[in-house]
Amino acid sequence: MRDRIRASAVPAARAAMDARLQELMALPSLAAQLLLSAADQLAQSRPGDDLTITGWGRTLARADQRILSGYPQPVAQHAARRAMSALSAELWASARTRGEWAICLRSAARTV
Picture 1 (cartoon, rainbow, N blue to C red):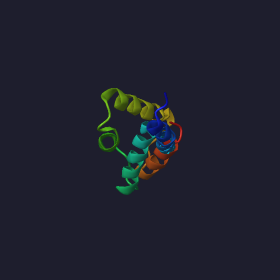
Picture 2 (picture 1 turned 180 degrees about the horizontal axis):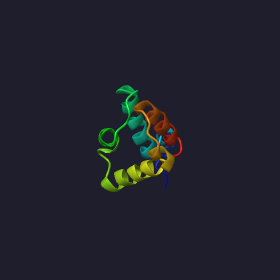
Picture 3 (picture 1 turned 60 degrees about the horizontal axis):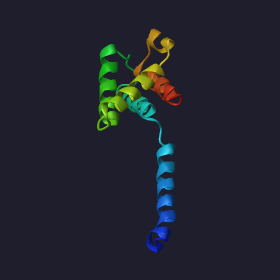
Picture 4 (picture 1 turned 45 degrees about the vertical axis):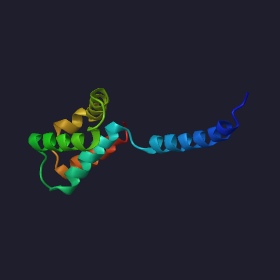
């Protein structure tokens, strides 16, 4: 026997779920969001200065807190690993300003 009340609601629920899924698929991955957040911070705060190891650590920690807090630890760790693996060895070898790093991070974010 068909349930007349729920039968009419199913297509509407499916449409809402499909719309939400489309919204989620349009968002950048968590790894990309982490890199973009770090890039935004570097571009906004003294972009002409050289990026130090300490500065990179603080920037990454702030981006991690902003983007990954609230997610389960395995999800956050996977996203952070993907983000760091997107950074090439040449990027680490050359000294760059904070602004140049921001550009490189935005480029790397497109790959994850």
